[in-house]
Length: 254
Image (cartoon, rainbow, N blue to C red; front, side):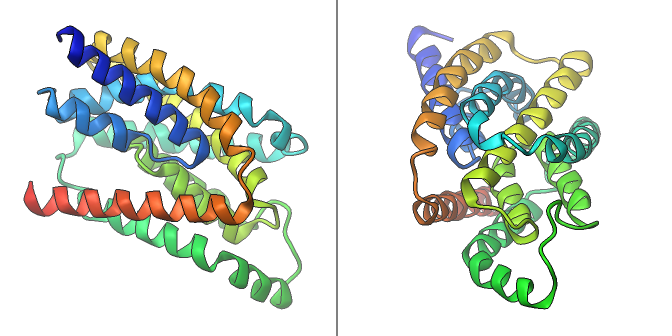
């Protein structure tokens, strides 16, 4: 890479770290840049996943106040996220790249739909059954599925998590976002360890994205915590729809 290419990767890392902290779709900043610079898709995915892990940590730390009182959730769902990330890493290294090309946009669109209808749907569910502090028996399965997706590709896993948890947990959106950041850090860190052990990352890319994502994660957390729930919901949906459109376009043109 020349200097300008390195700066482009670094800037993409900053943007990805910020968006991951606020919503969760940062890979859609970094992945296209790496492909445009000529990196193979698997190498780009592996290097990107390792590089974004430190930024996920700063994003989770930035939301530490909203994480208070959610220790049991982090432990319960974090274990499922870890298992899912390992499963996703195995799939990435052993399945053809086209497997999830059409499935991924569908998952993102479903998550966006859940976020849009979440307030009214939650109100209806509350009339049908009492609130469940841990989301009931099916939420861990959904968190595991999001971990598989995150370990495989990572883009918009935060949107999927917020959609699932918003539907299942009786909790305000900012606290859900904090829990999402903790879980995505577990997924990204687990995938990073897996890829370091079993894949071949480009360490130049890893270093640039890691440095950028740490800065972006810190800035994104400071900004995202100040958003009102309605504004955060709109931002999640807009980025999610953009991600789905981009992935569908890539699937049909690629």
